[in-house]
Image (cartoon, rainbow over all chains, first blue to last red):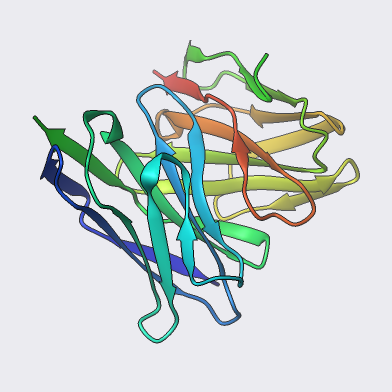
Length: 112
Length: 112
């Protein structure tokens, strides 16, 4: 079965700094990959997705991620962090639409 | 109104009690899912349903059951609740492509 590993359960950045959240996947078939964000006391919201089209995917709130097959990675980046970006972020992989598996999550803290 | 509505939002129940968590959606999606979220473990799939007559077990179905009453309704039951079922439970929906889920706001369940 497919799986994802998120490197770092907590990431802390200063406001205005680069955000980099790491995700590596394992899949025996071409995967669909996703990043979700969870704000306190809320459900998960889709940030962006890769479904075999362009390898650089742009999402909401200025986030983007690049699918790198050779590295089995799908890292999430944002050039300049904002206080409102503080949340928990989940990487997920599915077997082309079936059986979505989530990573353990990375909590992002943004310092003023 | 929210696209995916979960009730109740919070529930405290006693060990051995039967409890039902409800989910309804207005997205018109055929596919519905139940996940539980535990700190450090991300989200794990309990059950999923691709249409009204289709019910499938996920990673951690033991101790849970589900009912798909209609396209828009998918309920999760704990027949005899135990303390390690204390968690945040999420319902989600997707269309047939499965390329992005819509989540409810979650039910926080505490079993004492």
